[in-house]
Image (cartoon, rainbow, N blue to C red; front, side, top):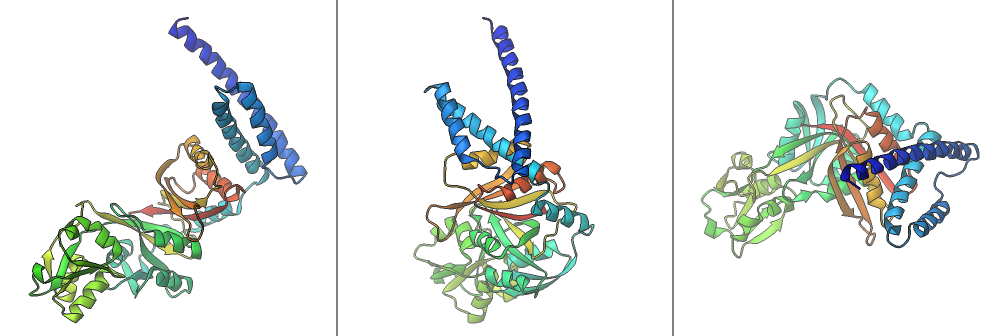
Length: 381
């Protein structure tokens, strides 16, 4: 047979597959109605195992794995269809629609905002990018920021979530899970680090460098060249600069922004010491309430999947099937749970896209997803 004839036969079979797929889903709809009327669960693992065993035997040893993969995906699509029919509108879907419909036309310019550190911190710079006229309250730790917003002391909190070279700030994701907050805005800030010390200090005087662990990580190449110098983690870059200025010690230096040198009377010993010149940190703005503004184009979520083959692949297929572009997928070990992982997803979508909202609704109600957290829909500036 010629290539054209072979392709023609394949096209005929593909058409038949589509017809069979549609017929199968007509029956799925009937099953969904029966389950709804009789208050039966959507998922039927025993039935799925029975089918997989049957079709694998029919396919034979050469193709049993491929056929099992195909039918596993069919089961996933069928369950999703049944849930959409039985659960007309999930709680999350209602919340997203309500938040989007009631949001003001633009993000507020005035607000009381919690951020970490002190004046000159990168979090403070990010806050000033997000709000035109913020009233900023500074706190020592990430957990303090969450507590301040949770207690109503501040309307919003600003925290670093990811760096282009050092990766995600996992402690913030852990707090998001613990406190059930929502992301309402994000900003990407160019971060340039400098080595600062009291005036009159020379490089040979320095025995210790203090800074935030992320800053130390982002300047690892430069620090590697400072032989014998101790690296000491500190809660915040600007706080480290402020403390050093007060102490006047010339055997210490800090890694912080150039702004901190001016603010606290320190000297720039070396500028632009990041491992990469294009060093960016993403900051998020969190709120207790779900706020979704009209310019939102990004959605974030976390979920925990069953520890079995194909769990993640099935979720990824759902995104692919409706053309959603994943901009982040990361696994995070769950503290206190051995070999259990939480997955962080970010994707591009408007919050009123019916396909995206339907997918979120489906994920939030899927009993096979052990834990689901909707982090928010927001714009990133």
